[in-house]
Length: 210
Image (cartoon, rainbow, N blue to C red; front, top):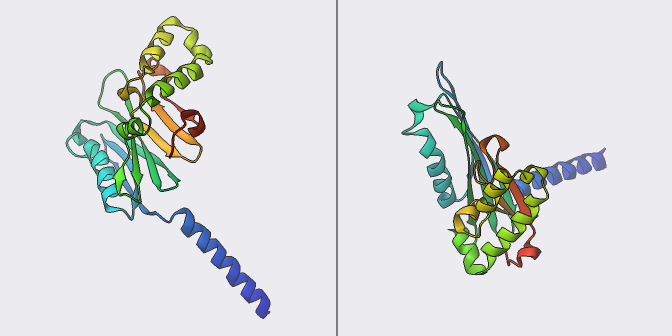
């Protein structure tokens, strides 16, 4: 009986330790829900143990919550986060409708180095490798060219323009264990109704030391 009790305690300790390791940096998440008669708001974002990171996340979310709140028919914000080495990497999925032909969809990314307490943006990647924009452009074009939807000349031309080797085309990215995830917002590489896209580019292709 005593052995079973000890084994049960050990198993419980392993489970608790595993959960703690998985969520060691994210202490909570904030959920804002407000379903008024004329405004539907569902907002969710992570809260970490890092003040500076929380401040930037909150700033991004509040941009949509504060001044524009009365203009919405709906506002939805959700997220996904990644942890890799010393990096916490977050993508915010934002959708809102203020009237017109269709809702708006946006993607924002935040990349944070826990060790240096600094944020990583496209300029930092360029500083790591002066040729990275060209590499990102070549990989993206090869990837999308294998998709039949880009056989249409209009869509193909949009894709070529949206994958040029300029900073604005690659400013939304996540640092993950699988590689660098690049996000393309709607209208960037295809018409609105095609949606948004992302691709994961391996670090060994980029020869990037992350």
